[in-house]
Every structure is written in C-alpha cells, then in structure tokens.
Length: 226
Image (cartoon, rainbow, N blue to C red; front, side):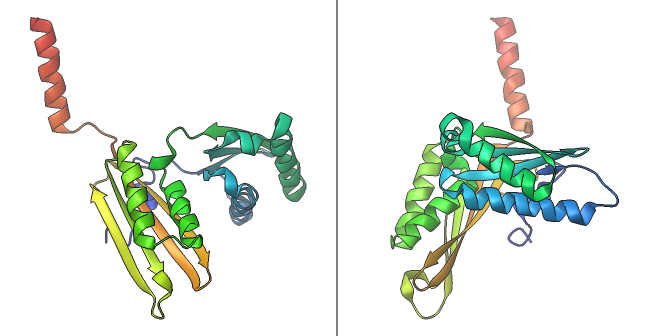
C-alpha cells in the first residue's frame, strides 16, 4: 500500500495543505478544468525556470495564482514583463481577474519535483541513468534531506525490454503520517521513448516525537538547574 498511495494525497488535510483553495457547489467541474489549464500553461511556458508547484485560490471573480520557482528572475522577466504577459494571457483565456505571486525556493535539492526534472533532463542528454540517480541522491542528502528514493522506468540504456530500476538512501517512511514526504514525477523524452522518473524525498518529521519531547524536557531542566 505504501508504494501505491500517493504520498501527498495520503497526507492531505493531515500534514499537507490543499494546492487549490476554493469552494463551490455549481461550478466544481469548470473550476477543476481551469485549475488544470492554469498549471499546464504555467509549467509549459516556464519549464526552464524550475517550477516546483502552483497554488491557486479563488475569491468571487478573482483567481490568485502563486508560483513556487527556483528562478524567480526568469519568471518575473525584465521589468516584470514576463509575469505581466502570463497574467494577461491567463486573464484572456479565463475571462477573470488574475493575481500573480512568485515565491522563491531556497533549497532546490530537497524539492522532489525539481530533483525528478533534473534527473529527466540528464537522461535526455544521454547520461547513464544510475549515475544521474546517484548524483541526485548525493546532492539531496548533502542539502539536508533525511532520505530519498528515485525510480526510473522505461527502456533504460536503450534496451528492447522496458524495466524499472530504483535507488534509495536514508529514511523514506511512506506509512508514517507525521513524516514530511515530498513526491515528484517527470518524463524524459529520449530517442528510445519516454522514461518516467519518480522521486520521494523525506524532509524530516512535522510533529515532535516522544524522544524529542523528552530530550527537550531534559535540556530545559538542565538550564533551570544551571
């Protein structure tokens, strides 16, 4: 079950927030299609900027779009022209008022989506898949990740029969709800066909454990006695 349940959906409403925040009764399907279209358009237009995720909020006839990116300068563009063009394009397509926000991602090596896209890009450049996976794992653990698992599936190395290969290092507790697991998926378009890349990154725990609480209590007592 731990391999089949989506790490984000499994924790939704418990330790993970919704990526789309709005409520409606009549227009649910329309809003859902609009959200998908916004995300696809942002991803397609700004793929090189390293888009980790796009969060959407709605108020009356206004749509607020927040883009989380590794390169905010590339998203905003020269004198804000890039973000204004994107806003105008979305407003024209949706016929609604669009508000655009850009958030910078400080540590890109622990963002699962960006790690998956990085590995996919290397596979497209014909880098050996095991080498690309090992380098990504090394960078993530050095950047503060508690654990990482990378899975590549397809005609790896150009062989005739497709297969799945994976590498893992550190802790990836998929069934522990308090563990902060980030998940990302990307596709590499190689001359032999598509290769899917899945990445799971453990960033630690969101709730304090009993051991941590006891350690903190001991530290507080020691400070008081001192």
